[in-house]
Amino acid sequence: MTNNHVPHRAAQFRNDMYHGTTHHWSGNPNQALIAEVEQLIESGVRPGTALDVGAGEGADAVWLAKHGWEVTAVEPSKTAVQRGQQLASDADVAVHWIAQVLEEAELGESQFDLVVSMYVAFLKEEQPSEDAAGASVNPARFLTELVAPGGHLLFVHHEGFDYPKAHGHRFTRDDYVDPDVLRATLRDGWRIITDAVRERHVDGGGGAHHHTDVVLLAQRI
Image 1 (cartoon, one colour):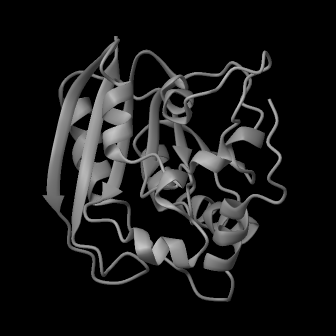
Image 2: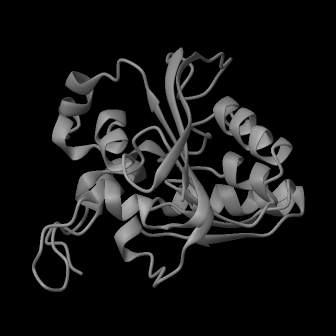
């Protein structure tokens, strides 16, 4: 599978996001991640393999590793990856980091017990537009196919996402897999566990100005 966009706009955007000496995010794991994964554990799900797509500076990946998950974290910004590696080292947990956009991560046929995608880290341009036979590939389906049978997908997106602002960074609405696109993909072969709009409270970091999230948790059946 190939993509003609070199370099990826997404990779450049994320490199710019993490440029500088200060951390972009608060360093705390996402509230929706904690709530949904704890709910899974309470229901009897055992920690297994997890993929964090667009892992940023690693707070979510490290939290998962602390709670028994075998974590692969994909993040195109090398600066963010270095910060995530340090965070994991400080926490004395193992996280396998891949400093690539998702389509270049060489995951092969790997499937994961849990796939986490937060805040439009999954950009359509990051995914191949055609398969080896030249057929069109649904980018949301590409994401869902990373989930093993019986596994779970957690997708979190800002409610009322500021698409005009994103356009200022040369992204259009069609560059994103938003909740409606994902819901349509999850109609067959999936069980929706959570589909909710939730308030969030973040004291600092890059996401502090967003107060409402769409949270989707689904199980592949």
